[in-house]
Length: 472
Image (cartoon, rainbow, N blue to C red; front, top):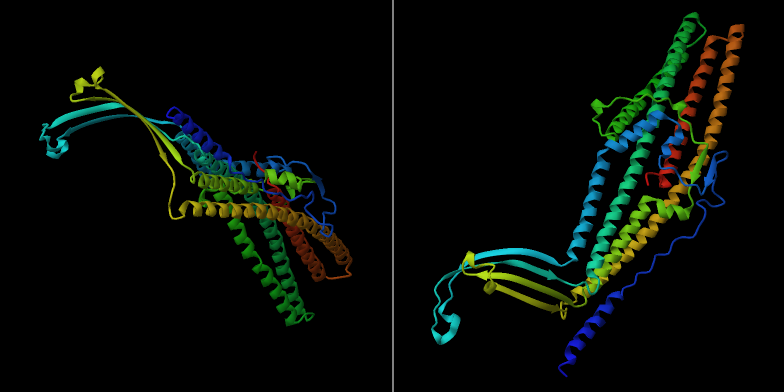
């Protein structure tokens, strides 16, 4: 019977090891859809959508501006938020290596020197006495806990999930910095153009006020006409400060995105009319979006980390075996070390199994299961929200296009009205005041057209960002 005991022990160990494969986590279901919009949603009238085409990493070049390209490249290179995210990613990758190292046997080399005196009770009633003595020990020691039930495996998997999460967070920040830089720069160009138009309107208001005052002195206008003209001038002047403040805020934001203090940032020269809206917009399929959009991938990484945490909690319910080995040199003098008689060694194997812990381990497993379900719900919600963002931006572009078409028609009508008013004025059929009123309407139409173009550009940028465009 005694000869069977080692075999029984090894059989029990193999049986326990087989339990390590008992944890299975199902792949979360994904929404099955090939479209972002329903049949009732508005779609762009003339904007060509290349459905299923992957967006280029340098997607901002579709706007055809070298100035924007240079500005975005500078922001991606010098932005401090991105620099912090890169270092956080490096930190997470080193944490993976550290966790992987713990799974291997741990070997250390130690040296110990001491002085000792045994008491009289050490040897019982023999009354044997040993005088104080010095002792020295030196040698390697090894400790190893075999990963029988996958705890170390799941710890490594969790750190790897955290590292992937940081990678996708970095990609999301990279995308956000590019999108914010592009949006702010275009808004800056729009503000410049709006200010130029408002200054023309203010000049025209002053000229109109002067004409009405002259007409008042000639008896062909009333004081009410003067008050109306002055009120129009004041209202148009009041439009300038908010736009000039917006201009300042855009400059400050661009400097921060580029990692430069506002006082040292060199303003860019960008003409809004030189920024071309891409004629063809690549739109990846929903199934591709799930596999490429950074925040969805980050949510999946969080789900993987939660699954690994559940694996750790499950593994802790099973026994652990710890193996130790020491190979020491022991002597009473330093010179006696490393001699044959001073060699000593020990081998030991310890088994630790949870018996009673007040329900802590099972509660931790249930906690991990709840955390996994929460991460799963968050992952699925992230996908739905991503689909919503793409749908919002597609319908926004459709409505922007309708508005831009109407604004262009209004601008053309205003130009025609000014041209006819000029002909009548030169022929003496109407006065200068009527011509200036038409010119003011023209400037207002230009202002509305500029804002519609700006909104269309911004919604196009939001579409690219929502589709997860960016560096691979």
